[in-house]
Image (cartoon, one colour):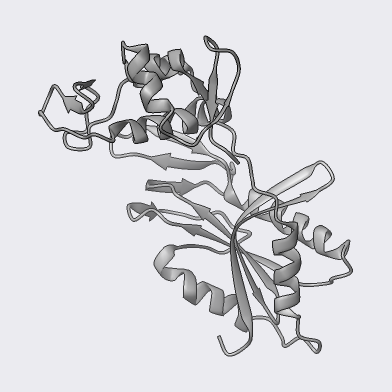
Length: 260
């Protein structure tokens, strides 16, 4: 851009009890543009008459999605209000970016610009060019420093809680990156896949990431063993203590949590 600009990523802001997370904020002398990222693949259909937004996969299965325009408009409202309380009157725009390569739009919701990643630059330029020059250009660096100083890390809820997924529906075991299966067992400080024979000494890293993403923000020795189909509590302990976890609780109910 010819004008001064700055970008911030993964920003969380609080206004009373209202907390919002922004995937991206592009600050320019004309306006602030909220970037809302969506990682959704397959065929996407939007029905203007019913307001339904649907993803259709290759097997013909349908999944009803939230209309992303409503979330973006809510974020725009939040940011305008948050800035106004700090005596900053600024135009706030928004852009929804679908990042999955295998995403195919058959129709799009109206009410906000929606694009794919490779189209993002053109859409950003079009938003900026559609706005008349501001007689008093925004002080980009001042706003950037204000937002950075007010940033509150966004605490994401586990996916099972967010999407009401039953724990019993999750695939248990340690994932094999070679054959994409879960028939992996622990053998002599290593993980070995019974299906393809591949070995991976750090396969438990991904298993813990899965657990923290889907189930809870902390784990016990027993929960880790049940999730990884691991029998030995001693082996589980040796794995868990190698991380710089926050540890709390008594011995049998001791929990391990990622430090903030």
